[in-house]
Length: 167
Image 1 (cartoon, rainbow, N blue to C red):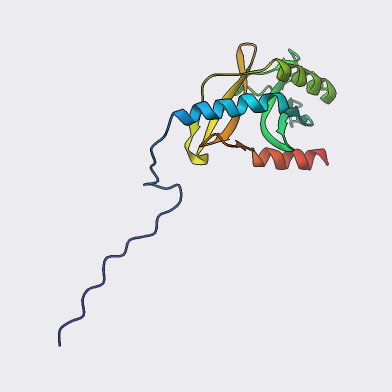
Image 2 (cartoon, helix red, strand yellow):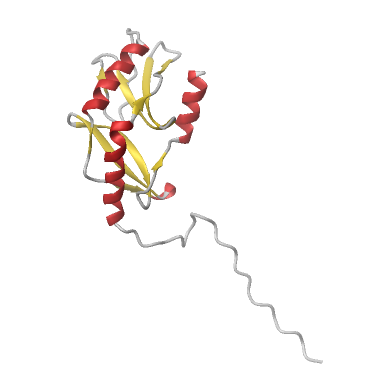
């Protein structure tokens, strides 16, 4: 009696987002993402400022930017300059207090002057475009848009923080 045939070698199942995910990135989708942010910009609102005091007495303030009750990003507030701080530069301030209503009104005014930068970067883990939004000559936030440019991608962690903080 002949021996049974050997089973085929096992191939492990793929992991979503892992090696081999590879798809061809279509740069024309960046244009759609930029247009989506331009369309949404007049509809963005300001959420309740999140003001934190650290153990050393330092104060830090972020103002969430909302779209349809979801946070899309936060704008750092500089209490020394009473202006938005560039993205990537959260301000820790000493010897000043932050008035949340003042922070909110400053960011609301900046958001009215904000403009969409004609460029996008791709965030591979989220399969989303990040479109920068500038105020004057600095980038103050990024709005994430789905790969195909059809929908904004909320910052779910920030959205939950806003809901906890505001309630």
